[in-house]
Image 1 (tube, helix red, strand yellow):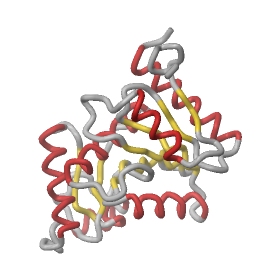
Image 2 (spheres, helix red, strand yellow; image 1 turned 90 degrees about the vertical axis):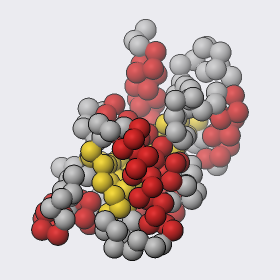
Image 3 (cartoon, helix red, strand yellow; image 1 turned 45 degrees about the vertical axis):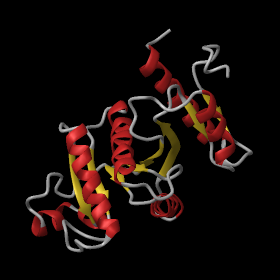
Image 4 (cartoon, helix red, strand yellow; image 1 turned 90 degrees about the horizontal axis):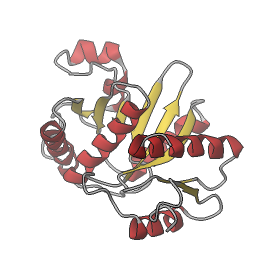
Length: 220
C-alpha cells in the first residue's frame, strides 16, 4: 500500500515467507502494468566471463504462447536495463522445427511470431536446444541461418519447472551467482527474496529495486 500510494518507491520482501505471500498482495494492490504482456520473474546469472538472463523461474507455471512472448520481452528488458543488448533464445528440446507436431514446440514457435510482431527490433530465435543457444561453434556449423548463432544472453524456458531447475543447478554446481527473482510487469517495483537469502542477496535485490524505481520515475 505504501508503494501504491507513493510513500515508498519500491518493496523488497519475503525473506521468511513463501514467494506467493509477497507476490499476491503486490498483484492485488499495485497490479500489472497495462503495457506488459505478462508478470514474470527474471534471474540474472553471473558467471566469471558471461552474463545470462533467465525467464521465467518463479511466476508462470506453464505459460501459453502469448504469455511466453511476454516473458521473453520482460527478460530482454532486464538485460537492456543493465546495459546489455539482448539476444533472445526460446528454449526447447527441439531445434528449428525438428519436432513440428509437439504442442510444446508449437507453443514456442507461436511465441516467436508474437515477439517478432511486438518487438521487431529484438534479436530472437526459436525454438532452440540449450546448447544451440549458447554454443557458437555448434550453432554456426549446424544452423548458420540462426540470428543469434549461439551467442544468446537471454534464455526463455518453456515452463517454470525447467527454468527453476536450470538456475538452481547452475547456481549450486556451476558456480554462477544468481540475482533474483527480479519481478517484471508490475506497475511499480516489487521484488521477493528467496527463502534463505543471505546478506549479499538482500543487498543485490535492494539495489535492483532502486534501479527499477529510478528507471520508472527518474532520479529524486
